[in-house]
Length: 111
Image (tube, rainbow, N blue to C red; front, side, top):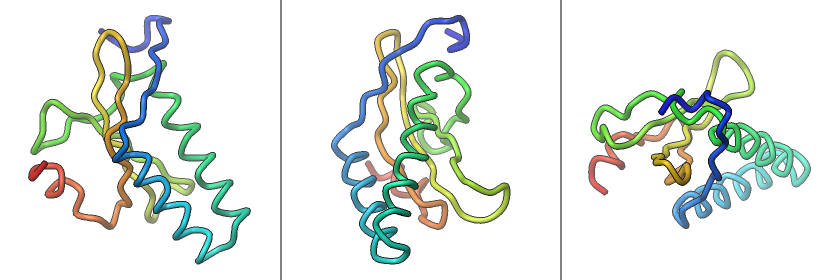
């Protein structure tokens, strides 16, 4: 399963990922304003939606070989977010969206 053969899988967000995105939106709105928050969430969702076409591109999570992750950031340097997901023949399942400064691999190893 290459994820690049032309098949497109639906991208499904787990409740935990939706909660993560709400927290990211809230923080961005408080810090930078509502329009920035809306724009940034749209940016994240666009990149996450791309996993439906290219689901095999992510790197394996070291502590959880059943999961993959992709780094999403607007600039080539600095912080961004990590989308953690799994996939099968039916769908891409987004489990979390972590800030890169979070100790996300430890969090995943305890789930």
